[in-house]
Length: 300
Image (tube, rainbow, N blue to C red; front, side, top):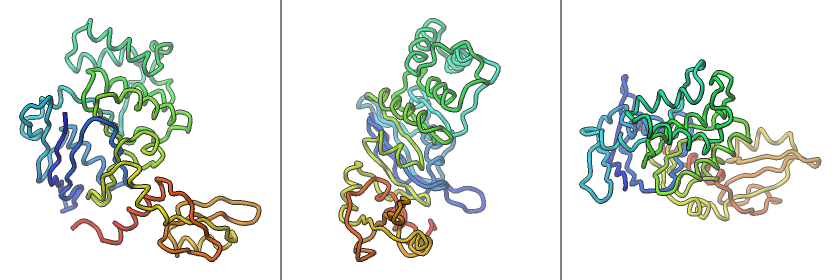
């Protein structure tokens, strides 16, 4: 099972490019699609979910060694094994979770017995069994996202796409959601799109960084960390210096202390005589690559 994305571009009205010559090979595991807001992540996911078509390029779905299918020309084979949680996922507030999932199962064409067994299992999986008869309007943001995951998993998909699933969730709900994604990944291909680095760091087996509609790099998390090894520095500076330091250096973190601000920066050489090298974090690598890409200019 794999998806081959070859030189895919998407142009919107006014000549704006959402994607430009984007190529990537996807296989089972959790792919973290990481990039700032407006980078083209949602555009790519809508094309993969067969909601919109690319302006140029081709996406091929290959399952069980069969001949690949161009999803723009024949989307049905992929749709049959697709689960999708969009960024703007909404619910019917007056329906209970059970009623909503039964409705979604009917929309997907599932027979009643299969749907009941699947819904019961999913309610246990996403820890909503005890509140399954409560109207969705009274759910927290995290609970609604778990309902979203349940509806995306109704057809036991081989490809699961989740777009910015933890935005607006508190830290506990975010951690629970990340753990859920890791638990259900198995032999699936899961695409987690986000601008929150910690979500990707905690779950992904591969990371694809995207900015200005282009793929910057795709690699294992360890490879990104190795790329900035020896380039991350920390030192203590007066708190009044922080605004100027942010203008001068690529600052990836700052912590206020009694003796000043502990500043963290990504740079080839020491930014301060008192700076010392520290082990890199994924956020350091993310800022390093995104900043380098911005200097190359926007998509033409």
